[in-house]
Amino acid sequence: MHRLSFVVLAVVVAFVAGLAGFLFVRGRAVRPEPAEPVTSSADYRIKEVHIQEEAGGEVRWKLDADHAEVFQREGKTLMRKVTVTIIEPGRTWTVTGDEGELLEASKNVRLRQNVVLVSSEGLRLEAETLNWDAKGRRVWTHDPVTLIRNNAVLKGRGLEARMDEERTTVKGPLRVTIKRERSAPVSLFRRAQGAS
Image (cartoon, rainbow, N blue to C red):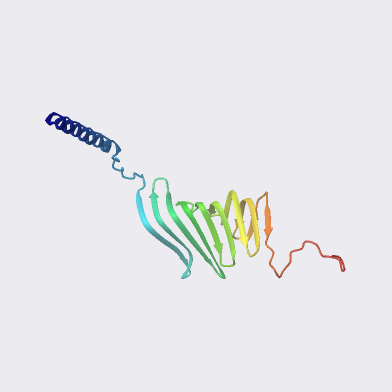
C-alpha cells in the first residue's frame, strides 16, 4: 500500500511538473512584444488643429482637424478627420474627410476617404476624394460622385466646379433619380385631355 501511494504521488508530481513546464513555455511564447513607438519623419505633430482666414474683418474659411503632421522639407501637411467650412455671403459650405493634405506653396488641398460636402442651400456631395485648386479656385475629382438635393440624386464619375464662374460639371456616365412625393406626381410628358 505504501508503494502504491508513492507511485500515485510520483505520477501527480510528474503531471503537475509537466503542466507547469507547458504553461511556462506557452506563456512565454504568447507574450506580445511591446509595441514600437510610431515613427514619422514629420517635423511637427499637432493635435486639435484650428485655422481660419479672415478678410475685411470677416471669416472666409475655417479648417479643423483632429491631428496634423507638418513636413517642412516637402512643403506639405497631412491631416486626419478634417472639417473645412467656407463662408460666403448668403451661404456656407462644410466639407469633411477622414484624411487631408495641404500643399504649403500652392495652398492646394486634397481630402480623401468618406468626403462629404454639405451646403446651407441643401446640397450634399459624396465622394472618395475631393481636390481644391487654390489658384484656379476650382474643386474637382475623377472619382465617382453622388449629388443629392431635395428629391433628386445625381450620380456620375468625376466633377469640376469653378467657383468664380459659379459653374459645376458632373462627368458621365450619369444616373439621375427623382423621388416622387405623394402629392406631386412625376411625369415627363403631358397627358392629353381625356386620356387614361
